[in-house]
Image (tube, rainbow, N blue to C red; front, side, top):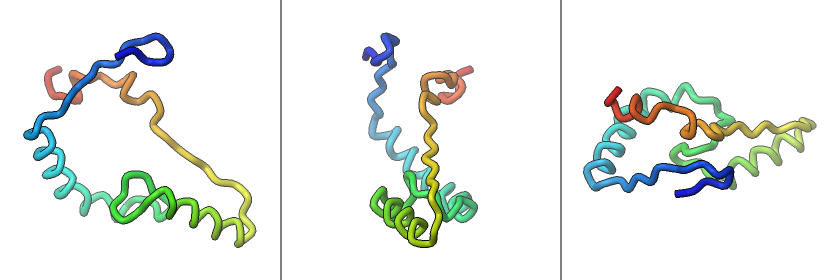
Length: 89
């Protein structure tokens, strides 16, 4: 699949077994790591949504704060070694 910058993105279609393993990992690791996340973190967190993030920003504005920071792992998966992620390197 072609990317907007002209590069190419490898297209992977997860199998049912991939999804089962991903869900098993989430169920084990989420309770371990989620409590350490910032209360201001809303991305891909159970029980949190983009609407919740907007409501939190509005509360901060009412408290007199005037800056919000949006952090994303943009291009991370374009630069990380996929072989390492798959455990074949």
